Length: 270
Picture 1: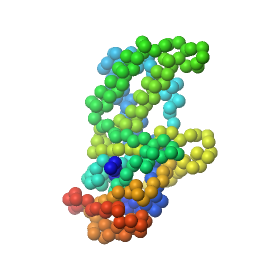
Picture 2: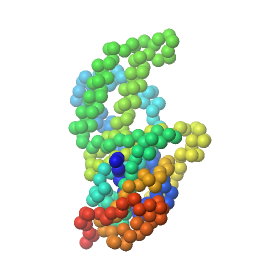
Picture 3: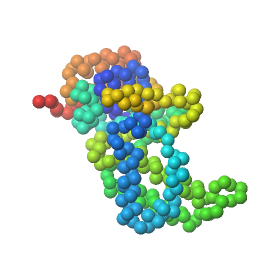
Picture 4: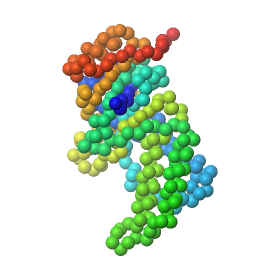
């Protein structure tokens, strides 16, 4: 069973379960300011170290194609671990919980594309992935037609450039700064919500205010009670936390199938 864990505060848990919605935040408003740009630093290092990669990149990279793909991307973050001290400390504010979700229903959503990505933090691994990607495309350059056919607005080489840029940009959503490695993040991504179509904008594009007063754009995705596997209480939780959650979740789901745990991590504030 494919289960991942979303850490949140008590207030967050209440809001998520009452609404049966998960918020996917516009990538520009996430807590890591290097989101979507870290891969560029890795790429620059590769191009400065490897002349073959630099030549391939210069031939295939096309700024106008990259701009085609630039649109708000929406992300919901999860952790692989059900009981992570790092996640408790950063995302639960001393009184929180995590929710274990089965994510199959999100990935099979018929209304909008949702992708799953496991975050890569190791810089050496990031460099290898990008280097291998560039070199693979280098082998294809000489085998494609560089001239447009009369029957087509694009040549095979144009298509190769688009594919190259698209795959490069995908790493923006999968590479993160190594300082965040303890999060062991798995993320669900909505890569695109149409602009300029009111029916889509009214349905999917929403706004809320952060604790710091920032107006944050997000989109909300519904889930059902059967998608919830477990709820785990913070390391400093009391038996009342566990009891309250059990009453709450049983009432909301009309089921006793959601497991309720208390963290097994020994932790206290002195």
